[in-house]
Length: 256
Image 1 (cartoon, rainbow, N blue to C red):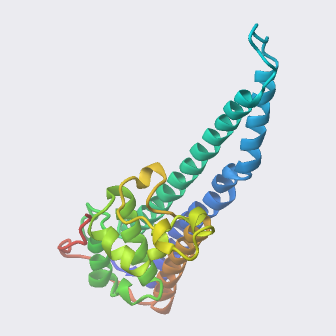
Image 2: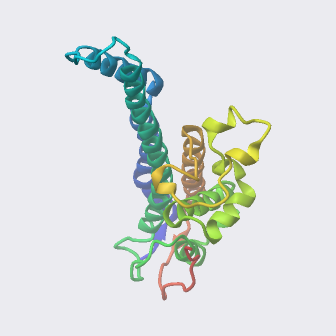
Image 3: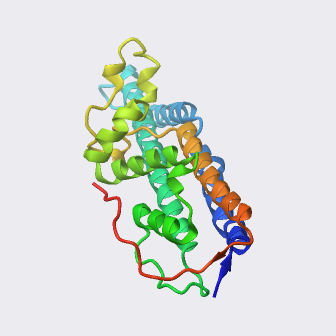
């Protein structure tokens, strides 16, 4: 049976867009704040540890010098800070990869409907899905204004998952900022090479790829824009009937 553009626009507005927006919004509003004030929290931990050590019974050879206790307390605060910074970076890297795969899944889900006369896609790979859109919805996703950002996001997701490889090389050429440690960049502005990862080895340990909250928001906005453009396409063709049938398209964009 035919599927109209108006029906598809309704699906985009009531399924894909809300989930995609919520994913990006809640990461920024509810996850990122967990890692706020890390310096103050580290200092508080160091002070508490120094107090605890100072309250321990003194040995016979104690000379009243608390420098060793102060160093131990400082080390404990530093360990907390370094660990939390790494977890924050790991989280943002992972959520960026998740953002891309959420987009892939939402795009693929729009290819599935009881009214369609073709079997559902078995793969959410962006290359396969985009070919399906071109063949069945007469929509070339690569012509949409958000597409270049989505391609960057795809390379970023692959780099986070696989480390150094073809995707990382391509991404480094167009987005070198994603490989620069923002904390070091503030102190080494005249020596950018010293704060730039030359190879992606531990992106899931908070190293080598540095997705910031600003970068995540940038890609989240691009994903939202992509779905808004898709909805606009269907609205512009609201009376068109999409007789979806035939075989599943071949070809894909491979991961590393």
